[in-house]
Amino acid sequence: MLSTGILRRPKKTRFALADIVNLNRSRSRTVTIQVFDWSTGAPVPLKVSPCGTKRCTVTVPANRSVFLFADVSKVGFKYEVRIMQHEDRRLITNVFGVTKSPFTPQEGDTVLQRDLVRIRTRLA
Image 1 (cartoon, rainbow, N blue to C red):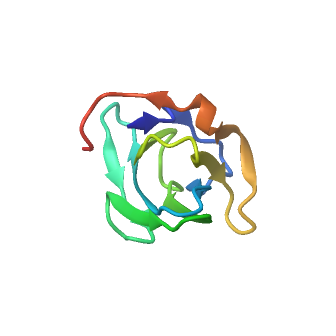
Image 2 (image 1 turned 90 degrees about the horizontal axis):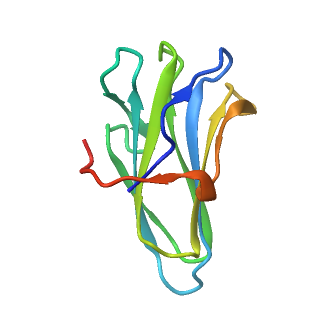
Image 3 (image 1 turned 90 degrees about the vertical axis):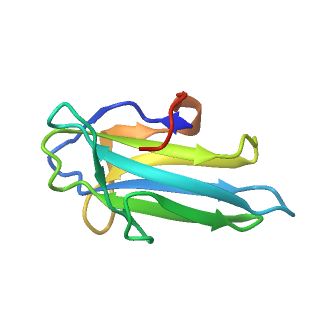
């Protein structure tokens, strides 16, 4: 499992968005995303789209990309994104805090694959 760690939500950030690309040419992969509001000091799970559930699992086809997102506009001031995915150097996930359309990334709200922190915990 990977985590962005706790991020402070800039005022204009409306969505936490995970962009995932599977560069494997022959094998699809599954990825599970969770987003938590940490504003109260305890994790409160948020719904993740496209699933509309608090834990969203999607299949990323071979040589394709997908994105998942959660509405963080009501998060008081801090949130976290957790990602469970296969260990595969050809499966890359980047996380962005973005504005409402046109989904402009916000400064301080970008966590690239290389910056995600490996954690050992069960999905909440």
